[in-house]
Length: 191
Image (cartoon, rainbow, N blue to C red; front, side, top):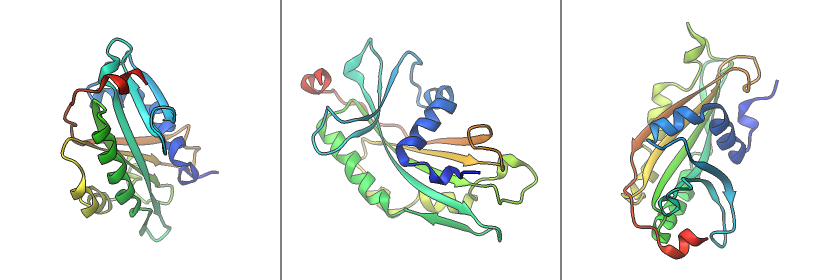
């Protein structure tokens, strides 16, 4: 059985929006009449935009979510191995850049992907990273360099059982900070 940890970052974002779209949009206080666009490359040079959320009625209020995946593997001995946390530094730089470009709202999203199949707990819904592990990610020093206009979002998809993650998974959604809206430049909106 494949592990959810094997999914590439872009596939994790799609997995979350395909399986937990309504919950995510509700937490972000976004109307469900929006279009989602993944890995958009034609708007900026030298890079892509991970997830654009556009309401066709107000395209000048584009919401951008830039993501980085952090993997948490729960071992047989119940220890937790955290990988790729250093990627938060790159994510902070990307988000700060996107705010300077003028997107209406920008979120930094940390995808804390957990394979909890080895977790021993009273209920499968607890087969995810411990509070201690999550807190170490939520309070990571790299986040202190983030522009205060950026929203901070933690998405925590977890493979809860030996079943395929497409059949049985959970996803914590935690909005740590809402973004500050800014007026989006007309040229950016046209793109």
